[in-house]
Length: 412
Image (cartoon, rainbow, N blue to C red):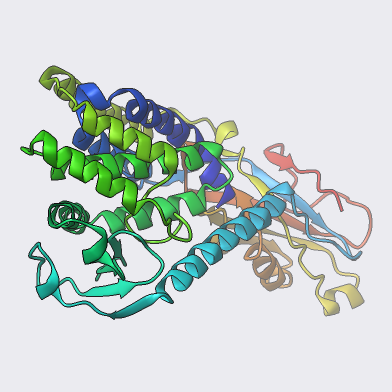
């Protein structure tokens, strides 16, 4: 997992910097709706960058040579395991906070709210409830979202304001924004260690609200815009528990100021800039796809850069140890894109069948740092390892008497 995260880091960091810049500077030229749509480039680029590729087949490669003694062996674990543990703790903590936040928010949901009391007609599929912890409407939930209204909704807003802010939440509903919010939170939970993702999450949520405002205020007059702005400010008086839950409002102070500013000075969308952004986006995704599937010449030495991070030493067979019997076994195996071993088989052994089983059992537990090509971890097939079982210091081997053996130093 750590290897995959590191292989994606450069791509996603560059993409986030571009999207954050566009959100900050491109609203006037592109319009809020286009800027919001451009955030799809991030998940699309990750998908394109991880298009499955064929495995790397290794022909006539060197054989990894490994000597097994009777002494006790401690599994070799590199720093990758430590980083994996830290990443897992951080991700679990984030997901826990996210789940607890949503649970606490849901605890304040009250009685069913009659749609007949509303000034704006809502789809039948949306259920409406009261909520005692909010000051404005909230669309909560992912696949079957519900609309939550403050206890004194009708008294707090004029009929015009009620209509406008309900249209705002309905826009969230029609676009499926809460599904995108969930995806954004899951990406943040995965890349929590990257500060750019925290900045990008705020930028993304701000883009979402700006796009929603633009949809609501299309073909409205100045009076409606003023009324809507006042309603937004009133809605932000009581913020929800956290922005790390699956609901629609994003009333952080800086975002609210930008939303009011955008309402006062509507964007003048430039078609040429929109067309240019589409062309650049398509070109970028095409470039990522080409880079990912490029057939680069790969030498044997480059393939053998796959390095083991966990190696469990085979247990010396008890009967062989009693008989002071030595021998060797050569195993062929694959390394998956996740770094585990697969398709293990014995291709030669001496004496026949004595050390085969313990060799295979040990190799099943080995983990490798897989080879990365084009920014993507590759499956490697046809690798070989020789295990020499020695009672005494290494001597000449029945099988290993060849110059094609690559000796690996293993610290114990």
